[in-house]
Length: 225
Image: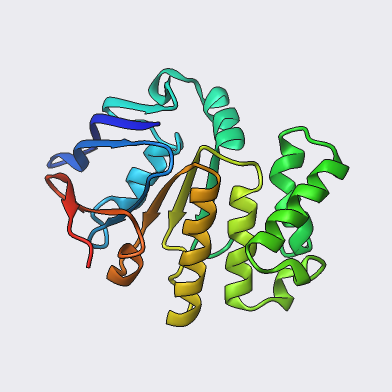
């Protein structure tokens, strides 16, 4: 489903090339939910941007469900992201002037679905992640945990093949973080998607099926606690 082969990302600097990522190899199937850890500045966000097609590797290939991202132009990668990738961020990135329901509807409307069908699917996914009673509330009226559940619902409402979560519990207390990660994992598995969790937290990484550590030498399997 997701395949990275010998991926490098290199930045030219005055003193010579700087390898933000070197020789990254990864292969994930549908239903896989993995965590990637690593020190700050090691390139975790760079890796996520490459997998999402927001950036291009200097060498190597990235394939999503048989489609080689590195062979697509910007417009084609944008369409692929909109249809097949869901994002969950630490900062939520909900639109403040839209209710929870309308925030979650948005990916469906951008993909051309009618308002009626979008509303039904958005309501259903909000109920599935445990915030069905808050569909008409605005982001300012929700707690951190509720905001993150709405963000998860928005990421999953269009049934993406790939879910990318970048430090999704960084702004949450430990209990709320645990509940949020459980919801994220449950929904990724229910949709038979691939889930990639970027995190600094060993506790968060322990919720994944497998964990990797990103180092200057590449991506290495890590024993989960």
